[in-house]
Length: 66
Image (tube, rainbow, N blue to C red; front, side, top):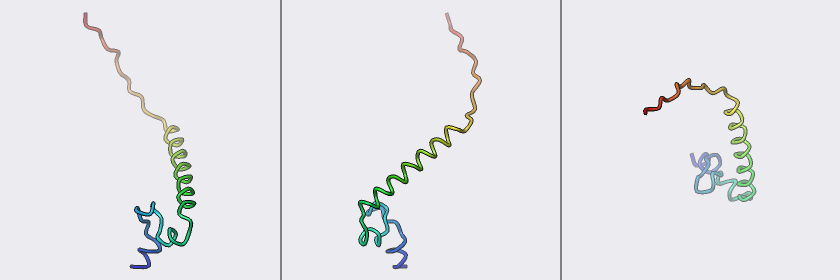
């Protein structure tokens, strides 16, 4: 359990890094890598979602009341 907590679990207080990466590595560099990966993932997801065919609603034009 302690090994999992320190070596595998992502901690929100450490910017979603594992403690072993935070204390033994360069946290700023790892945050920058993570930021770039998330940006690429957002771009791909947006592109995929925009490619989906969206259903259109067939609405009748509103009638104006005199």
